[in-house]
Image 1 (cartoon, rainbow, N blue to C red):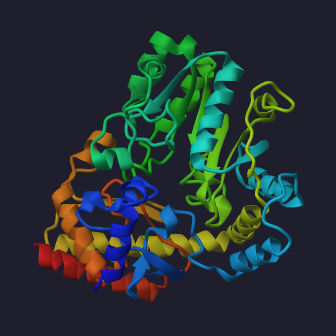
Image 2: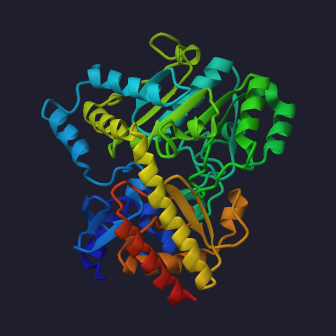
Image 3: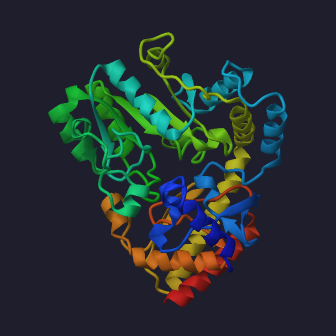
Length: 428
């Protein structure tokens, strides 16, 4: 495929935008290529500036669970935007969105809208610290919760891609308030709480890790976190920015039947528009201003156009048949990949749940960050290049999730498996 226009745009972008991109993983450094510049999208497809079409498994990094330009979402955006795109005042749409979230997410009684997943996690941690009157927080190695100073320590995703264990600009004094534990190691968490439990405000966790690639919780891990935090009076925060409405209508917490104290949301609740939210038990959420003393604000929070797109998306997802269809397509894709890898003796581990998954180039399973980072990055680079040249668009990092949408047809998935088999054939 010719990518002349993308190359020209990237060269121009690098002169005026740091690294030529507005989010680091988009630069495609991990795969040794230059990024594609996208001109349009529809259903399960995107087109680059040179007119090449790709089957899209990035789906804007997860929000587009219905696919691109879903007619009901676009109609809602058009209808509301004609009345104005921002008011800086309350709207009925904010109330409807909050009611939908509270109705679908088991643990949420009250919710506050924000503008990104990063803002959601930042605000939830401030709330946890204010509520418990404690300073320390516990997070897990390889889990990414946005670019908040307290959380950008041993994070996954973009940081893992560039091999940066932490980030310059974070004061050591602040980093010292963040405790790191290995994901899926409940024994280590128990020991940390035995030593420091009275000082820990909260545990924040991706209930299914999605930023070191998809890593599922081991049996008893989430249950153990719930038990330990309750015992020591710390709050349990589920970062469901990725898993919220992706794993099930009620997120990972409904799927695993575990209720956290606070939940962070994003991505799908905006239907593709910028969004975030955090919510939880009424008793805790009432500590937020203007009824409490813990301050948080946002000029564009609850933007009417975003709310309209999100409401349209969530209403479709309330239909139980939606997930049956979606998950069947994902199973077809990921199980198909396993079969062709066996045929060509390619060493892979495929982790998937519902409609999200990752192909790791290693055998033996992936249960934590160390497992994930021991995969064969060189083989992934070649795999990425082979697929992109064949019109299959996947995340340009071995530490990200693929996403399947309702718009992906059986034919799209069959073609993807065919192209993956062809790629494995050339790699073996």
